[in-house]
Image (cartoon, helix red, strand yellow):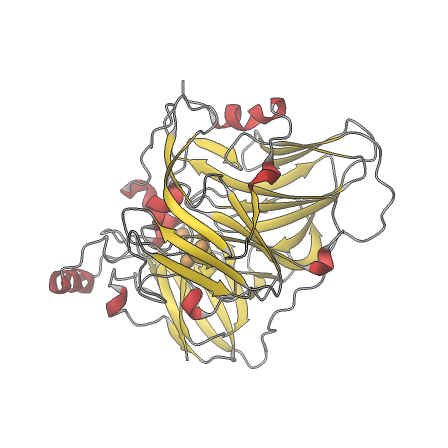
Length: 465
Ligand code: C2O
Ligand code: CU
């Protein structure tokens, strides 16, 4: 019988304290190595292994670096096709952004590439490929990058990453369909097996009164869980890894690629239970269970807040306004003509043959990155921009801009205070304004992070000069 989502996620209570911390890695002298290759993965509830693609033997991999430290990672491509690594949410130099053809030459099978930069901002980030992303990401090719801030040392008694991902697998662990036209043109394809850190919902044990930080990272290509917590007063302290003015976690949707750092003080008595759940449906789905045990922690009056983010503040009064409309795509005859002339196949152009979505009326034309379509807009480095995004579709879209951390100013639907982000989720018919200072010159992708949408037209880029 197929493991139902609830069965699998609810199974965690029995497996107290999986050794989650063992997956954390710090760089050795030569930096990190990301050895991307097919590896079988034992997923919970499956009778056989899943042919996953991973960067290391452990899944998920969590790399940790201190803010201000140089970060180097040698990407070794032991996969069959070319690839690269995109550092989602990190304000990297353009040449380190990991978009094949656009920001670097593709790393061919058997070759390697060294990513080398100093992450400017602390926070919870992740990394993944940027070509044939649907195939790679649904096979698990993603990892977490935590940039630690020395100013946060000692703020929390438990600092735990929770990687949310669903697997498109059958009960025997083999791969199931990852897309269909019907799903790609709607909300996307959902995996049948929901996991947290590759397993069932974990149980974490903390002392009464412990200060807990949960870094939720949604690496799924489709699902948008609605985070909610019972048993403690949970605060959101960082959005997409960036410190925010803490606000109460009531029900917060976490679109693909989005991160939420949630903090709370565990109840003061022994045997108390705190639940992190996806409360999207009437029956909540357990994501993590936190239990108190042992001696109570000594009282600690420090507020549950991170040091304020230090990001370039857009000048709203002088900002240039840019419209961005998310819409259903049209199969533009120009695309067909382009394909006919160039003979490029879908694989060569990092997209599918199908177009269901568009940005400002233009679907990503499937052009080879060597023959780029025009940018969505030309921006001037150092100048401020406000992008007014309108979701004209009946579906939700998490929109991501590379290499920039923007301020979500406000929205026609959502009441949360302005906050920093790199991915903003738009509900159907929602209008949202985001503001940022254009960064380093180069081409910076902007796309929906529901990967089936991205690969069927909802993709473009800004050119910063
Ligand atoms: Cu995680 Cu182009 O994105
Ligand atoms: Cu979308």
